[in-house]
Length: 553
Image 1 (cartoon, rainbow, N blue to C red):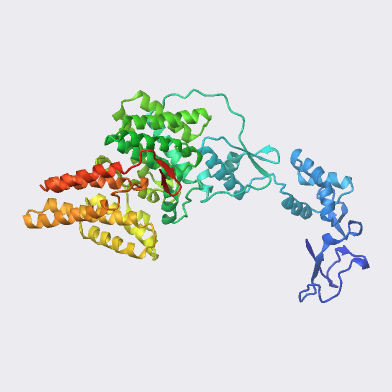
Image 2 (cartoon, rainbow, N blue to C red; image 1 turned 135 degrees about the vertical axis):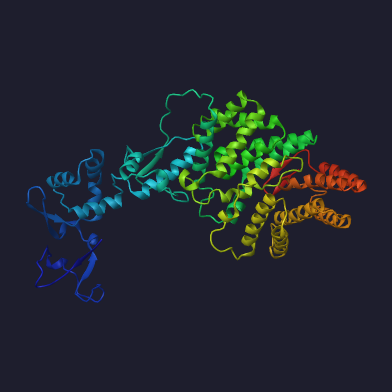
């Protein structure tokens, strides 16, 4: 601590220094134009402290007060803590008690020392934000949370009520890396168990929104993270891999590949608990989409049964656990098609909520658009997804000018192409232009171009396919048919003879290719495509094990 000393004939002398304690008059002492100089008073021995007059606000009496060294303060720390924090005495009362024991200091000195010690009775905005962020992360995985400051529970709700605000007015993007030293995060003792009744539609829909709201504020992909980083982060996530494996398993079951599907299903369920361990709004929406996608009812039932049982087994009691348990109870007591319609309705309503009024961070929903356009196998029903995709608005995703870096620009262009293409059934000049632009951009990107190429080629294939269906002239129709299957041939050639669990959807394009050939009357090509599809299925390993960089087999 640095104290200034001033000398002026017109200013009353507030401090009396003995000659040996006067500041040295040397060039090394900092001084300003007014003659002010400073030195470190904590380096002075406590037996020779400068004295300062301190007036009592209650008695008006003057008491001499000393500048104490850090060691002297530390020697009284426990006593001051007991009086100020544990007994909750006002600072003036603490000062009076300490003066009776021969320790004198000013209010300013006490407050300065309290800042260093972390002696605080009140909640600051920064502390409340940190506590709310930690509370949300723990709540998402089913953990109850209580905060203690200096041994006493912190009443966050009282702070919010006093300020007249809600917790969503305070929460900021990102994660609170560290709570202040005087704050501790604890799991309080369990309350008396409550019977979980089968929830109705409205309560489950509200749970979906609550989980989305909590998870959107999670550390996983904060709202201020660029779209490219969010997409890349989730693509490499273990939970994404687990859900993808279950999707692949469901597709293999549907085409009669039971042994291969069983291996992938087992692999996926092995990591499905990560929905609790690494919760994110991306994973929640991906899971809902997978349930809507699945053709095997047994797989869907097992997903909800497993997640409900896991939450019960490890005694989780948060919104996410209650959602999965509620979904399982709903599925157990309703017709499957009714349950499917309900999950679809929950998903659609989530995409329609007003972020500002629902507690979601700004731009949460546009950042989820890529999840809605995850490629799916040919035989899956497309109409429900076209309805969900119609809820996407590319303009909500673009804030300000488009990025200039080729990688990031291509992500935005590919997303616009997916949204526009699905909403227009791949018609219009803009679809054709975007598809060719994305395809051209991939030449300037060093890696991870497969998905962009897939999007561009698929878009061009569908564009010409629709031209084929709309035109009357036989010659024009034949030209567009040849172009449509040409682009599909380029797509399926990527996968033939190999297997990538993250690009399994490409095998579905072989089925599409066969169908397009047959519809155009090209039976020989259709039969050949069917054989190629069967051979591609045989390339999938029966003992599938996912590795860090692909698969192990």
